[in-house]
Image 1 (tube, rainbow, N blue to C red):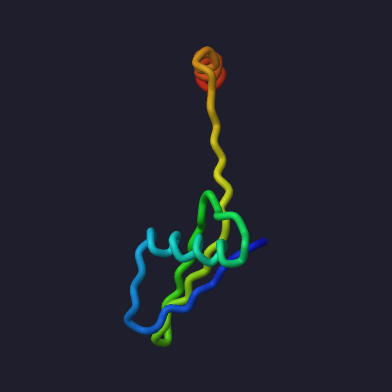
Image 2: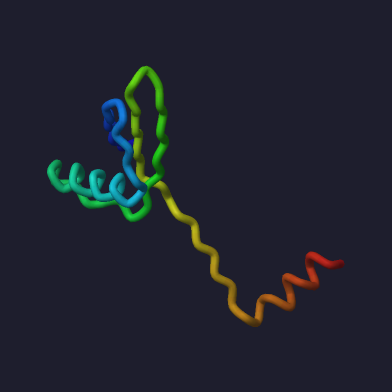
Length: 77
């Protein structure tokens, strides 16, 4: 599993958008493609902040309109 870590010094704050920008920059510098979705964990303590970012898989489910009555019947019976 790929991941990227960053240490932020005391008093430095970072927004979600800035984290995504930094991760994309780090991946490009390594010649890797940017991640579509990014999961981020932030740990603060001892005057520093640790940021761990990883690619996050996104699951999408799409249903055809004609399937909805069958699903409704299945779950209500």
